[in-house]
Length: 80
Image 1 (spheres, rainbow, N blue to C red):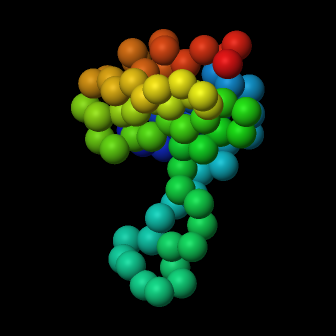
Image 2 (image 1 turned 90 degrees about the vertical axis):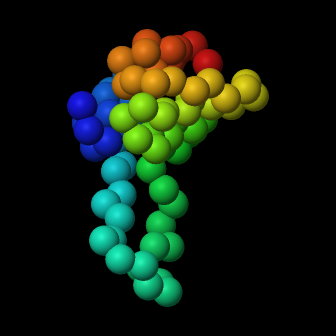
């Protein structure tokens, strides 16, 4: 599973629209002004840093760190 597929799976599990933002391959002054991926309104933050480092932070809760995508997806609870 890659980053794009992971964010799509999270959006499907939460029942929200997938709004993946493709980042530019280079930095420039105005090119990166969109909010990053992993923000889900009504749930919180889910961030993919690498295949072995994924964080899940529901609103009002502490951050959990996971070493694979499957366990991170399993921890996401729609009831939050």
